Length: 279
Image: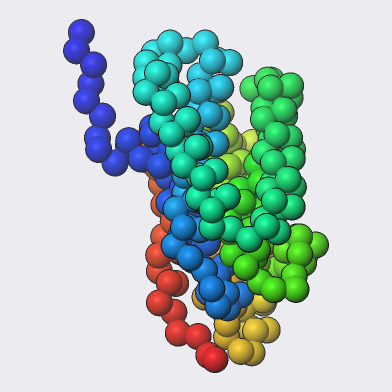
């Protein structure tokens, strides 16, 4: 039988292009919020390529672990491997040629986060009745750290510690880990035929989203200079969109939910790019 042709927008997820777009969009918000004076375009390209490399590798490893030869990653593994090598080498070259030397300290920490994420993916329990909260938490931290470091490394006099304790980094990390947890929760509910998650899982998703949105609103109001307000309004918008998607997820297929989850993170970055800021 002829394979059903997939809609064009689905290939953003299948090719792993959703994560790089989200990272680049939020990098702009990080740089704008922290008032980075010098921020070359190579930083955005290098980040996008690096995230794309990790995303492709994660897809290939996931397909290999599941043994599903019918999946997109399995059927196109040769192409994806070549893309991963090309994008990884290109990201490395751009990093070596354009980033300050202090970036290597950041990359060491970021590499530990990424390796920890893959280790948890390999060795954590595969029980479908258990959520991999530790893996999602480490994945959210790794993604947020990689995104933020591409701006923070250009701030003179600041280091990794200041990045890790910043409100912006913590808020974005939580948003990312909740989005990742939501996708696993929704996929698990679809497999078991449930119309919704159990009460414990529902509370573990909806309550943190509510708290994150409330915290982002407080942080935005407390920022008298308005320099950080677009960023925290973006966090608030992302949390609200995930809440809406969680309530209406029964209308969408699991594959469509993945794309919509990415849009929940991408849309705030687009909306608040031109939000006015005080000097």
